[in-house]
Image (cartoon, rainbow over all chains, first blue to last red; front, side, top):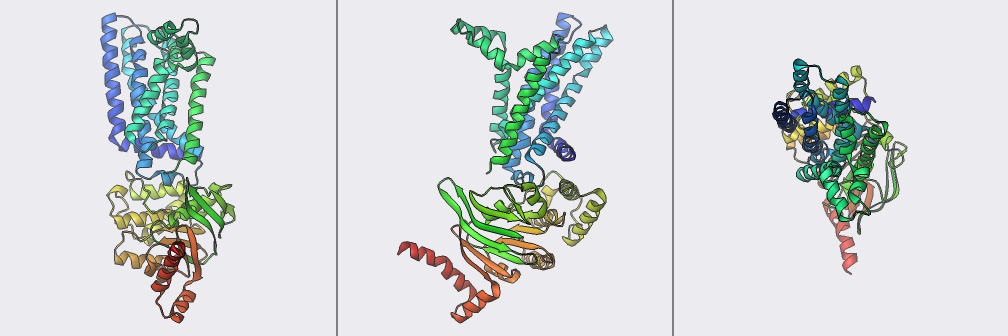
Length: 243
Length: 246
């Protein structure tokens, strides 16, 4: 645990040493809050649905931007060799880096708090719904960060790491989009591949259930379990991939 | 302290290290000599646990590099060929981070950092970002980081690469001080550097160990053959080529 804390602390500071964390976090926040404000005032409804609708899109860009710095940049700068020759296990380094990325994701979510304060200033919103939505956002972030970290560990090109991380995120999100599901189901209705893909691959469907106020054990386990699989794969790559 | 037996490392069809065997005892400074691409860095990378051997046995301080990599890493101080430093950290913070990664407690850590800042002459750059340090200072920061936990084994890959003559002389003095109770293995493709610093010389070429001999024995052999040491080494490197072409 001491080693994981040490790595997480170092990586969190390193993320803030580079402008990419500031720029990506602040830009994502501004975009999400602007889109939320526009929809919120147009709909004139006292809920955070517009905010949580845009959070997955922000995660799909912000988290790969963080992940590319966490591994691909290390391989490009040859500091990867330092990580794997210090007396730290691969799992400790991977978890430390993951927690540093989650730290930034939590800061991003904290940055959306003005929207919550606005709701409380204007009325009496459903606190339980807000909490479950934030929990869903945290778990969704954990999954998207874990997959982007794994993909980042496969390359020394930061742009490739970013783009594959974004593509992986889109896969987990778009696979549950109703329009895509309908199109795929329409291709071969007897097999219903869209529904099949959504049921097995969609992080968005699980996230949506949190945003509807339902904290399901199955949904939580799926999001956390899939994140754990990617962290395990990341540990394997750190042990085995060498430049 | 270091033991390699039939150590082999392949990269696809390329055999980078070919069944080499050697030992390094505490108090010994052994130089790995060979032209570029001889396999010196590969052997040091296997000793550092960065790479795993394809075949053979390799152990450091009694720990197998494959079975017990963490114990090996705790026993070694490793200076890689290319400085692996976090450029965004200040020199002192970087050293403290490495010390904590090695499990030093705070009191011991501060004492070791202070001693190594003094010993490696880093006081001028201590509060500077690593990325803004000159090549010479970066090398010294790497050396200080490698020595923080007082390792039993020192692995130095081209340690004087990029240093000016004064820094090279200082480094030689440094290695002489470090040998006490430690096994030191360092690679270089500069013969003068190896002979000036090492008790024993390992000559590697195309992944094969051609010579494993004490430096003074080699000097005597060169004298008896009417050559200088450089001539003897060059003959040893050339002869496999001649055998191959014959």
